[in-house]
Image (cartoon, rainbow, N blue to C red; front, side):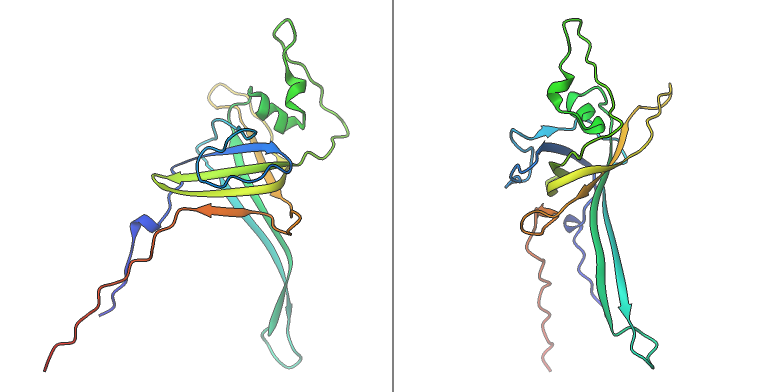
Amino acid sequence: MLQITRAADLAMVGANGGGWVAPLGTPGPTALGTPPSPWTGLGAISDDGLKYGIDEDHKEFTPWGVTSAFRTQITKSVRTFGLTMWETNSPIVKSLMFRLPVADLTPGADGVSKFAESASPSPDRRSWFFLVADGDSMEGFYVPSGEITDRSDVTYKSEDMAGYDIKVTAYPDAANNTVYHLFTTKAPVTPPATSTPKS
């Protein structure tokens, strides 16, 4: 009879998590959990959670006289992270959404912060860290060089939470890596040995 070992504690549900950002070139966390300064938290993220995107294209090479490819070549490999930031009045969240230094959002004597959106925005690369937690199980994603490359419309209405829906694209670092993964792991479960009945 077929026996399949299943371990629920090796499965992952994105029950909780967070995101942090730091100046470009900040080393990645070496442990799972809340990273120390200079990492700054993004605050509340919508209940849609975090979407880790994998976008790859391949070119197939099919020999003459054959109907299936005998080799493929990866021509594009991009990693993205999508989330909606709900704390839209947070200085770091405003800074990310509008490509501004946080210092530019310091309130004046009247308590009001002011800024203008440029018609010619400059690149705004930063280091990012995302963490997904399911009880004691955690998985972290360190992006040494990432930039917000997609911003969705912002809707203000009475029955919805206003949020900044963004997509972060990971760029290669000096080692040609785009994303570094950290996760908790357990030793694989070894099924008990079956004894052979004596004749």
